[in-house]
Length: 391
Image 1 (cartoon, rainbow, N blue to C red):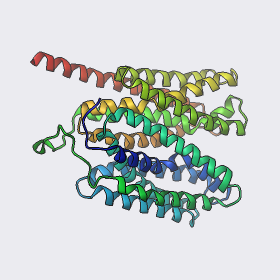
Image 2: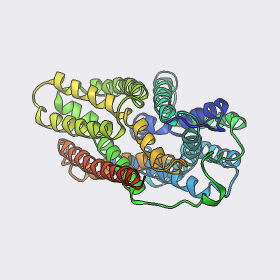
Image 3: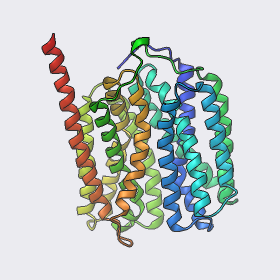
Image 4: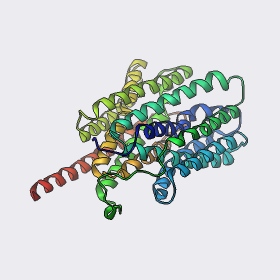
């Protein structure tokens, strides 16, 4: 979907950089929260609360940004978000305990969500938003992998986990330099007339956001329990950790593949195939749990490949439904909320050290997503038929 736009390459460069900073902690949670647990700053139960609190707040921050879009200058809102996020990183480095850490990371997540909203809003209003959304997913994953490597090899071994959060806060604060490349306000789409700027919800928009939420819930539920699932399949603890790292790079490959395919494969067909494959992968892991490591590793590779392929197609459908880009701007928030809801729901079925029921929960959510795709596609076809009939 190529449209003319007042969003420049400089705007997009700033958006990609700021958006990647906004979601850094999402990829670093296993590392930093694991160190907090190892150094007795948080309990085992508290790790889940802290992680979920930040991701939920991040999603809500994206929604909050959409509500504040007409009240604040984009640059001002971005500076406030950067300073608040960096400040809460420094606060995290000075507190201990489940409650204080959950509060600190939830406030950080809210600020990170505002930062992410501004970045995504520019991306979806720029040229080739579907492809740029895929590029964004690739860049943010690479940034998370590089940051994780820096923490694991340069900072955490010789210092406490607090140094990790100080480093994260300094990196976040330094991103304020990119604010100068942002426009003062979000540009209006060329096809939006002043008298029609009022936004109205409809069923297709709600169905799409539900679909995004459910697909990422299926992904998040499986991803959160990947390490215990790997150990159950026969991997050692260290090998299971290395698997997570390897899958991050596989996700980058999947994101690149999504960028290449988004203009060549029908949108709804791709999302339906992805939902079907995700259900099949989770079911395959459940059925073949005792049939060796190689089968499990193959399914993990396919899972990681599909994960980042989804976003460009979700954004493309959102722009078809709402050319203003407002619904597309909400997609990251729904993705994050889904990533938090999936593990929360899956955790209700975990018994002791047995994480296998998580796979069946992921299957159910993928099948539900497949049903939502069918509903959304039928409404899109009905609309096209109605337009042709009217002509």
